[in-house]
Amino acid sequence: MTEAVKNRVAELVAQKSRREGRKITQDDIFTETGLGRSTIYEWMANKVTRFDGKVLMAWCDYLNCAISDIFVREEVVSPEHPEQKAYYMEASPFPV
Image (tube, rainbow, N blue to C red; front, side):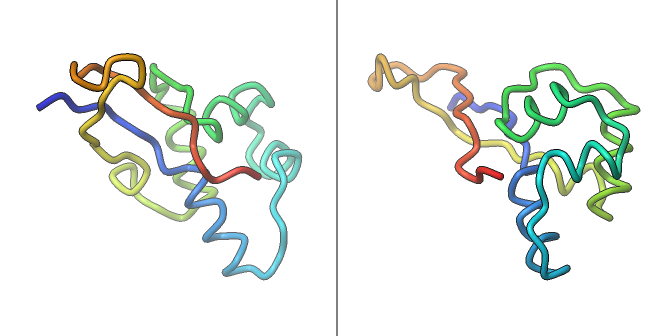
């Protein structure tokens, strides 16, 4: 079984948005966390492959969650070769 790490940041931002009754934009996250715009985009699109401790703590503080809430392990199949399992990370289905 091949697995990959996927982040749940976009999903957690959507949950926070519903909880607070407001639409949260990436500009809001930039203003409220101090994270760089490209960093926010990469995390929201689930394109991050290296995880910086300071960035993780900023997300945890902003989302009021633990690091373990941000990541999930998934079995993945390469879309080019579904018969061969491979590491493949899709963009998050939760746009902001």
